[in-house]
Image 1 (cartoon, rainbow, N blue to C red):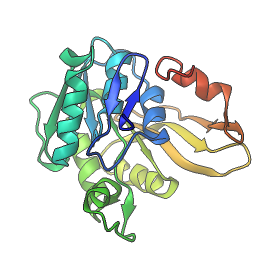
Image 2 (cartoon, rainbow, N blue to C red; image 1 turned 60 degrees about the vertical axis):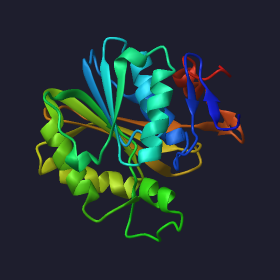
Image 3 (cartoon, one colour; image 1 turned 90 degrees about the vertical axis):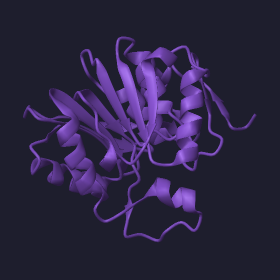
Length: 234
């Protein structure tokens, strides 16, 4: 059962998914902030793990997930249906560019592909999951701007350069940086990922550095505290 990842309140089958559960995704799922979202959209849900985490955190919310890869969308749907949060969750096998919804979303999240103009992975599914086309981020921010409610926010995790580029693209669509979390492996390492929050309303920037490891193979107390409601180890 190596494909099964067990959390405290749900299980995630990763069968057929090119992008498996990773630190980026689970940190995004725990760090997202919103006072009371009613409608949530997870773009590029993969296994569905972030959508499941958000369903657990926000029990009043309906969580819609979008996934372009057919097998991954099937797996995510099974994970949703097998969870205690099944009534909150739905997945749509479609590219975000083609996705339409009758109402806007209070909260949009994404752990997207981020290698642009980079060496393509020879395995097709991993290439789709990890690599973005030249226009992907333009299309993504344009779609987010259309789907986000007036008081809504968009949380995304990306490598540093791609995050900086996305923030600049977002400004042109009327979305502004409100939260910035710089992820570090440990206190001696430079940031390797950024979690950013974009919103229509400008506000003073909330910025923090977050360390994952205290020492080799030992997680920080902050990491354990964030994940204590999800990981069996804590």
